Length: 555
Image 1: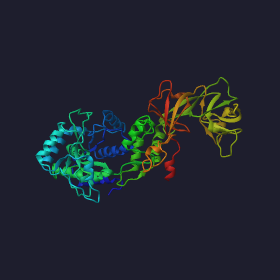
Image 2: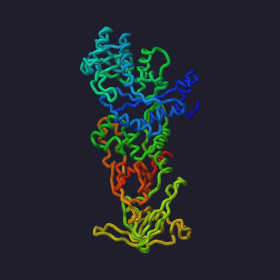
Image 3: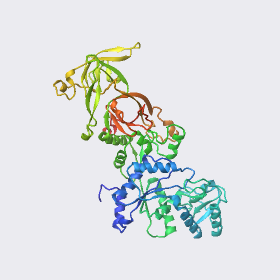
Image 4: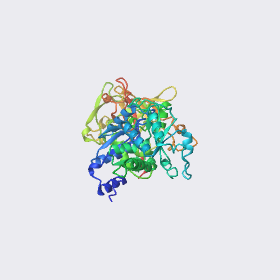
């Protein structure tokens, strides 16, 4: 057994060894278009499309569009865009609604075979007869309806002659089965809703369990891969397939652990609630765990795929530390992001012995991790801006930034020494006066340029800096398991400080910034240009800081 393979790959290899042909391999990703895809879906996408790449097999994209009350074309388009952005392509684009007539015809066949019936009870009565996992259920009083009556009622349901909730079609399962899902599950319900693809052609819609396996069969899916919560559905999946097709070649459903991330909720219903309550700005809010939100936050396709690979494919669920996700995007951006100097909380510094009207263009590497990234020229002048927290009038020996009477190096520039300060009427420092060593210019080759000082600060020239808007994002929830408290709703753990907006200053080489382009603000973190940017105001979203908490805590 190859330990580098996951258990699903071992299943597929065993099937191939036992006679399944390579040409018969086909996988699928079957999202419901009732919301935007989230980080949990990234795992399902990577598993299915990754297997397609590994085994050189086609992968279908099938939309499980059986609930018109919640589904929209908007979500279909967003899902397709997300999958393509991740770098995957599908073979066939399919829809469960493509099979509505076939599913209906097969349901009629089950009625004729005495394996399905129309139940006219209320949903409450049906639920009360289901029993419990340790107590058998009770047969519906309509379970013995004649085949002719069932056929007539089901036809009338399709023709719109009955109200919503008045009838459902149920499968004759086993009302004493320990698997509650086999206790005469509902196959069809009446729903007078306009479907985003079929319009008003149908007013009865198939349920997930009836639709899913039959769709897999129609599309000749070899391995139907689901998350663990669908494991109890496997018995019903196989029962439907057996009753419709007999014991011939059928898809094989297998389950893997879904992705659970701390400080996160991934229920579409709850994400929808956040959007509708205006707790976030939309599905693509950078604090959301949706793919569109992560993309807007500055996460890259490679970082998400690397994260899924690091998490692995297992049979047991566990809670993944969000710091691992942050580690993956930090690792990817470190290799690709251009460096820039930006000052978020500016403090004015005047270099008293620097010529008043002089401007120098200093050379700076675009990315020291990428030799092909080249360099840029950064303007330097008499008055610069540094971070307020990079200066103290007095500090102990462990403070290696600027303080009175001490030296620091300005990145790519000179060594400066703080001499005095200017304060406002409230005692706040508004200007630091420094001197510089003209021979200490970085890269000049002089002996002074090699002189070592303990602190290096980033900076921008005040007269050349461009003002930008920065959105600093933190985790949306303050609790690591916001969905795990029975006595409190998940919204009670919303982090009220998850977004902080401020004006900042950046070097002038940023003029060509386009939405989606990532930069490392040196000594600050990784930031991405937001689509809200205008020619007059570039907006940056903070992706992740430079500090790596995950590898620090896991080594």
